[in-house]
Length: 176
Image 1 (cartoon, rainbow, N blue to C red):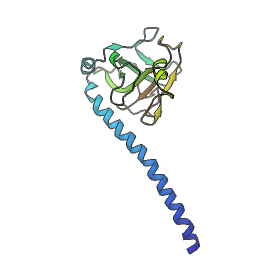
Image 2: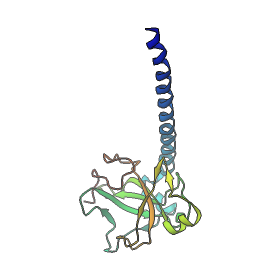
Image 3: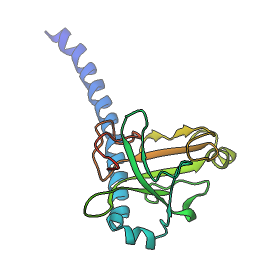
Image 4: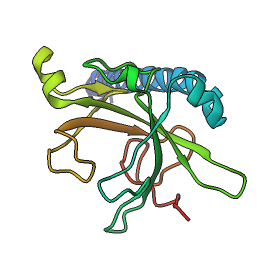
C-alpha cells in the first residue's frame, strides 16, 4: 500500500498542476470576454454603435448585407464596420465590426468580428493575430466581399452559438 501511495502522490500532484494550468487560460479568457461584453453592451442600441463609429453597413459583392452561409452552416448577420479601427492592430475591447440580426423589434446585437488585412498584419508580425487564445482565420483574396486577404475572428458574445464561441457561422440565427 505504501509503495502504491508513493507512486500515486506524484501522479496526483502532476494532475492537479495540469488542471490548474488548464484553468488559468480559461479564466483569463473569460475575463477578457467579460471586458468585451462590457465594452460592447451599449451597442445593443444600433444608434449608439453608429454614434461610436460603426457606420459602414457591409455588403458582399452581390449587395447582400445579412450574411448567411450558402452551404447551410448558419448565419453571421448584418455587419457594421468602424473604419477608424481598420488598421494593423487588434484590441479585445475594440472589435472592428459589430454584428446584428434582424428581428421584429429591430436589429439585435449578436456578435462582434475582429478583422485585419493580411498584408498589413504580416508586415509587422511573424504569426497570425490571436485573441482569447484563438488564432484568427485567414480569408483569402477572391472572397465574396471583394477584399484582399484578411484575418478574422468572430466572437458570439451576445448570442450562444452551438458550433462554438468563435465559429464563423451560427445555426441559431437567421436573416429572416
